[in-house]
Image 1 (cartoon, each protein chain N blue to C red):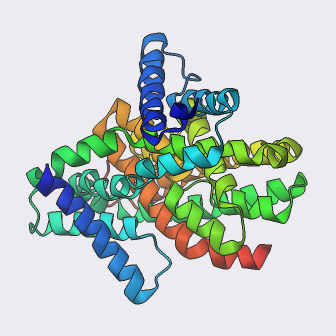
Image 2: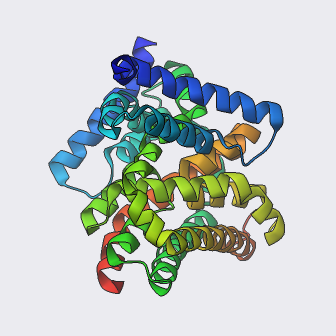
Length: 117
Length: 229
């Protein structure tokens, strides 16, 4: 497990380094994720070196949203006075994103049909 | 009651409440008993009831927060496992992600403005589709309230996680890959974990939507927001 966590945190540290050096407005975790994918792809990192730690972390992703969510407690007044625009815009926008994304994907795939899947 | 403010007590409480609410959903199969929703509600009620200051909980929960970024990194593994499939579908995936990112930004901003939300709130809601660390960064950069952004992200995530599959059913697109992808685009990690529960293969596509929309939003949102606000 030490090797597994080392690899994951090393990727994250690398992401931090890239952000620190270049100032790109991309979170270090995304850079770390893409770097991990790349290193797995070219075979520098073997799948079995990270698989079990990755399974544990990705399998319980939702847990890590609880603590940030509890911060709702701080914005009781603000949320009380604007809860309609807040909830309606989030919900309608989420529906729109889902429907437009899925249909764009479907239509582009159809017209881009070099291979049918 | 001072013992209740101890950080290990508060961390144990968070894990415990999550474990119980996860079990509760499994047993009852009621989607609205979403483990995150139930856990957040129970912890807020607990803090109110015991009179523990939020800052105490915040302090304790930093030990949990540091694992959010490693979780995002770990998603590189399912992404790697799906690389070949993604490569074959690269054009539809990229085009749909750009569309989803823009629709998400414009729709939430204009609807919230139209319904009378203040600028500070509108900016906090704008990055609601993407994963928490990215959304918070965008919100902070643009002058929103990061904590409200977290809540907006959680609402978008839970709504998608609870109702997403039914919405896709009604949309009649009938493409499991496209649906999983869109789930990640619209509802980030919560949507992804919901798909992951059904299948890791499709979960990887949700992970693609999550990461691509995250990257696109981090790059595009600041420019678009300063333009339309």
